[in-house]
Image 1 (cartoon, rainbow over the protein chains, first blue to last red):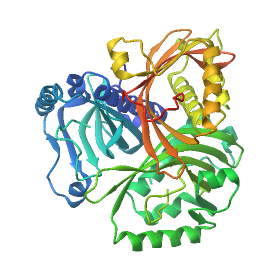
Image 2 (cartoon, chains in turn purple, green, brown):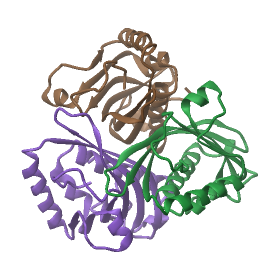
Image 3 (cartoon, each protein chain N blue to C red):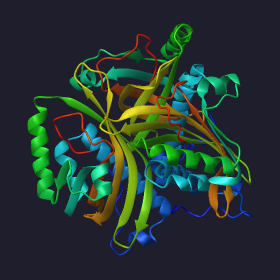
Image 4 (tube, rainbow over the protein chains, first blue to last red):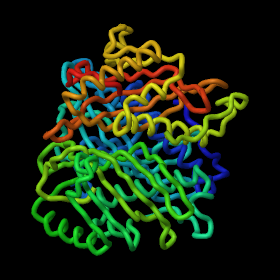
Length: 172
Length: 172
Length: 172
C-alpha cells in the first residue's frame, strides 16, 4: 500500500480540505480493489481498523432488515479466518477477479470518521473461460484514521443479486 | 442529495478552479447514479434544469442523425411522466440497476455552462437471476448552475446496442 | 484531445501537486478510452511517446514471465501498423467498444516519469446483439511528459482471460 498519510488526529476529517479528502478516498478504494484483484489476499485485513466489522449481504436482506449475510466478520480475527479459508479453497479453483468501483460519495463527515458509499462491479475469469459479471452492488462504509492511514471501521458490501454464482465465497 | 454548492452566478464556470470543477462533476454523476440505483426515482427530475431535455438514444441513430430515440423528454414535465410510468411498471417487475460511470471529460467551459462526457455501463439484476450487463454507452451533457446546484440542461445517454433487453424502459 | 498541459520539464513530476497530478492522470485515461470507444482510432498512437512500447498480454503469461502477447508493439511505427490493420478489418465487422477504467493508482513518481496502474473492463456490442463483457484486466503504465502532454512511454494491458472472444484483435 502506497497511500497518502491520513489526517492527524488533531486535525479531524471535518477540517480537511474536500479535495484532499476525495483524493484519499479514491486512493483507499483503488488500493483495496488492487489487494483483492492482484495483490496478496493476506493483506486484506490491513484495510480494516482494529475494531471493525465487514458484511457481504444481498440487497434484499439488507433492505428488509434481515440479518442473513453471505459473509459476516465481526472482528479482525474473523477477517483473517476468511483469508485462510479463501487461500485453502483457491488452490483447487483458480479464479481471477476484477473490481470496478465508481461513484464514490461522501455521505457524512465528523472529526473522527467519514461515511462514504460507492458502486462496485466485480468481474470474474475462470481458467479457459471468458470474463463474466460476478457481482454488482454498493459499498456503505465508515472510515477512520488509524496508524496514520484510512481504515474501514465498518464495511457493508451490499450485492444486488440474491444468488452468487460460485461456491467459493470470497470478500468483495 | 448532499452535493457541494455550485458556483455563484457572478463567478462563472470559466473562472472556477479546475480541481474544484472536477470534484463537483464527480459528485454530480455519483449522486445521479445513486438516485437511479438506490434512491427515490421521483427525485430523478431534480437533477435537471427547469428548461431541459433528456434523450436515451441508440448510438447508431445518434451517429446517423436519426431522431428515433428510446426515451425522449423535452421538458421537466416529460421527466415526471416517465417517473410515473416507471413506478407503475416496476410494481410488476422488480429490477435492480447498478450504474458504473467512468472517464468523465470536460469538453467545454463557458461562464454559464459546462459540457461534459462520460462512459457508462448499467448492470441489472432480476429476481432469482445473476447480474448481467444491461446497457453501455456514453453521456453527452450540458450542465448549468441553478438553485445553487449543478443541473443537466441537456443530457444525452447514447447506448451502444440497438436493442434494449427489457420491455420496461427506464432512464439511464 | 483537450487535456491540461503537462508539467514543464524544469518542474518534474516529483514536485507536482498531488491533486494536480491526479487530475491529469484522470484526464489521460479518460481521453485514451474516448479515443478507442468513440474517437478516431488513427489518433491512438498520439497517446504514446516517440520511444514507446505497448503490450496486450494475458495475465497468465505476464505472471509466468512468458513473452507470448496478444498484441506487441515495440515502437510507434508498430502502433500505426496496428491501426491500419484494425481499420481494414473493421470494415467487415462493425464492433462498438466501451472502456470502463477505475482505481487509478500512482505507484511511483520521479522527476521525469510517473508509474500508474488502473483496472479496466471493456464491453463490446456487435450489430443486432446486446452488450457483453469483452475483456477485463489491469493497465501497468509508465508515463512521461512530451510535447507538453502526458504520453505513455510503456503501456501494459494485462487481460485476465487467456481467451479473447473475437478474431479481430484491437488495442485496449
